[in-house]
Amino acid sequence: AQKVTQAQTEISVVEKEDVTLDCVYETRDTTYYLFWYKQPPSGELVFLIRRNSFDEQNEISGRYSWNFQKSTSSFNFTITASQVVDSAVYFCALSEAGTGGFKTIFGAGTRLFVKA
Amino acid sequence: EADIYQTPRYLVIGTGKKITLECSQTMGHDKMYWYQQDPGMELHLIHYSYGVNSTEKGDLSSESTVSRIRTEHFPLTLESARPSHTSQYLCASSEGLAGGPRGELFFGEGSRLTVL
Image: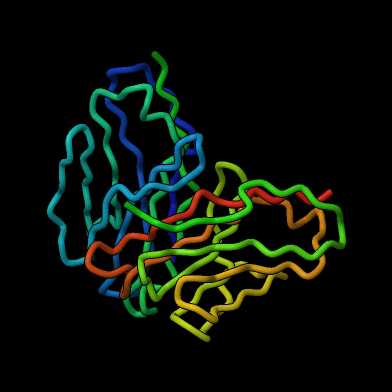
């Protein structure tokens, strides 16, 4: 069965600090997709990144970077030089190709507070 | 830019009332979903649809029902609202397998329901 665990419920940092959000997943499929979404206080979820199970290359996008490691079933997200606008709830999600991709399940989310 | 719309954004109603939450997307996506989320908490899939005339229940049991008569429209109905239905309901759509080439879900802004 699918499962996504985000062990960090809340993280509080001071602006310009680096912060890493952890995500551990469980799946029996060999083909699956991992995602990170951001939910700012306004409430609308915003897509950040997608990774398929065959692509373990890490990715950097501006201040954001993602570390995908199949050996540990982890897909961690790092924000470098955090800013107040990064304050939001961040969700890691998993979608299995075997189910047609319909059942995207989400972790419980990590609430990030960035203080000025 | 995602084009998925939910109405109403906020609704306060009394117990026993029938309500319909509307969701429309203009992207021509086949797949649509309803998630239930308490504020800042985990998202739970309650309904999804492969396409017109196709609906399935998600992982979280819900007393709501959905219909998919047109590709762009995926309304959710509660026949008799109760205080336990108080929550935020998020509608999403995606292109294809695991969301298609980019794989992501496009979310509406949500409908926050309060049942007194």
